[in-house]
Image (cartoon, rainbow, N blue to C red; front, top):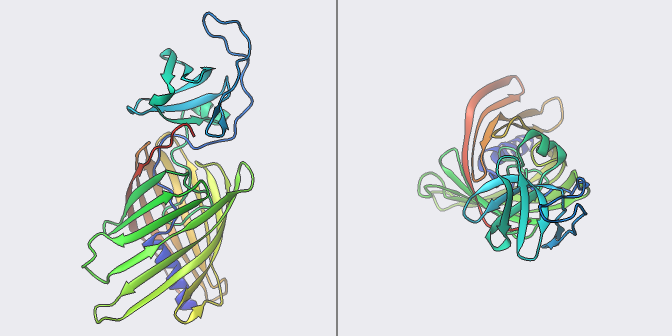
Length: 326
């Protein structure tokens, strides 16, 4: 049974989950609004505070710094100085005042004070480490496709702001053992920085001789901090045709944003938690732009008297979907 659980832990390493984190992402994830700056001044208007407007349930705050992306792909950061039913006006450092028609906006994301100071916004919502999930979720209408180690293809999509679903299939199904895995996940924000979630990685396989089988892992997670830099703790139980495992598999991992484009990533799985147990995981880095990302990782493990580290992980991902005025 211990070996079964350890295998399930590494199966999630090699097969993926609803993580998704994906992938890769448009600049910025929704963040709690911060106190607006001093009353805005716009040429031709008195220096008084302007009213805020509601956008899909999220208030626009005059004086707040936002990351903006238009339908045509133009991206910039600026301070919101005016908001009407048809337009938003931003003050930028290099281009001055820019007025954008609401119908031309693809995404509007508020920046935290740290983001505004550092000069870059979030890339994605921090929904995964490498392939292990975090407790953060994709937003409704947001999705990504991902190629894992060349031979696996994954897709994840946000059904709502709290529920996502994913699918993993071999890129070339007729090579090896035909298999399929589904990865639903539910996430709930407890506070601005703390999220909790639960999900399932459930895989089906059909043998060459006609036999078939299925197995999976049910898990719970807690993730603390932002979309860029966060720590995740999780616990999962394997299950299969012989029932539910008697001991859990634990995961601990983190994302650390280093710069506009690069992050350090780690995820470690612990099996058995006893003197005869073992652990293994992935460590490496991720390159992420608004739509594309790529990750490189090394597999490390210690099982009884055996240990090692090998280059073993590569993924590329593309983020799709229209997150308008979130």
